[in-house]
Length: 130
Picture 1 (cartoon, helix red, strand yellow):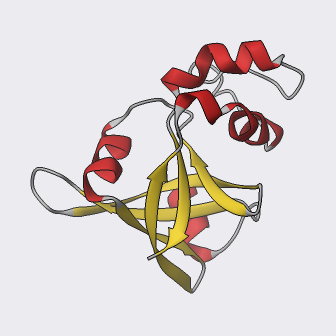
Picture 2 (cartoon, helix red, strand yellow; picture 1 turned 30 degrees about the vertical axis):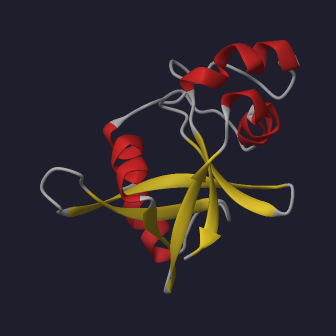
Picture 3 (cartoon, helix red, strand yellow; picture 1 turned 180 degrees about the horizontal axis):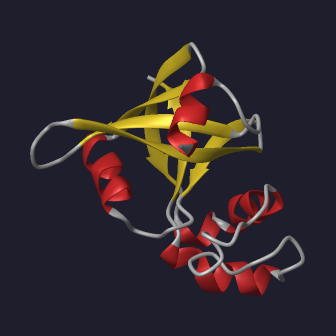
């Protein structure tokens, strides 16, 4: 249902639908993400960790970002774990619901050390026009 909302352009401004090609079969699938706008760019913070979606995105290096009728092919650049704290904090500021909390148990008030402690578990990708 969230994927449909993102695809229709409904919901919060940060909600987007991404379409990714699988690394084994080459098929595509779509899933919702929240896009963080920070430091003059757009970022995807993988709150669920190193999932198959993340592995497929890494392997392909690209994905299609969609919100409503607007869609854009983007190139992914992974941010090193040592530089992820501001992006993790910005993602926490977008809100953490009960589905995400077991995987991303932080708040905007969490210390930088707390975010640094989880940085290895949550890939962050810069989204740049392809």
